[in-house]
Amino acid sequence: SHGGDAPDCRAVQALGHPLTSSRSLDYFWAVLSGSLFALSFPRFGHPAIAWIALTPLLVALQHGSLTRAFFLGLIAGVVYFTGTIYWTTEVMAVYGHLEFVVAILVNAALVAYMALFTAFFAVVMGRLVARLGSSALLAAALVWVSTELGRTYLFTGFPWVLLGYSQMKVLPVAQLASIFGVYGVSALVAMVSAAAAVIVVEGPQDSLAGAPTINHCRLRKAIINANTNTAAYPQCAA
Image (cartoon, rainbow, N blue to C red; front, side):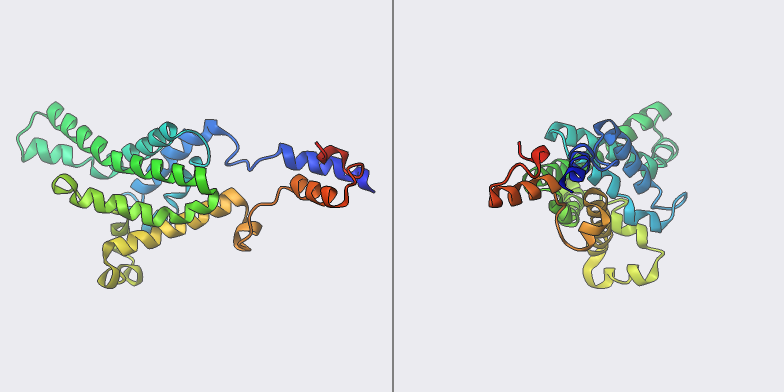
């Protein structure tokens, strides 16, 4: 009977994906993404982690303003680079003969500068997602590599801990750099993270089938309008 469809339709309207419906988790996802980036490199990490490192940040960028996206990206970048270039503080203190406090401040400034590129990535992706929906996540690899190129060449450049470098010990993947360069490897790794984000946001069945998420109430309302019979599904008629 049609009466049994009402709870189902209301449930579709009320429920969101548990990983994407709460904005309060966004900053946690940003910190998690930065941590996964840091754990993708030696000496504490593993290259396999890099393949999903970008996913939490991309999930967090599904809603909110561009200012929010900027800070999410900045947080992820600060964690990322703090966890990977922390050792330069000691180098500057020992070999550069800087006071240790000064070396910490210089390192913090360098981390903040590098994190700006991650923030810029987040702003661009946030803008694309706002205009095009979750399918824009598939552009993440291109945008990410663009920020890495910027980090490499702007202001004399600082191309340390590029995402592609995380795969240096994985020979089959690292060999791709001989053809596509380290940026090609970065793009490949980021592309896998983006695909994982699409699956999380849209759900595995819709994502793997290449179909958008279906709003059941809208679908039923279209059918109702086509048949000019709103009595069948009163809960969707409004």
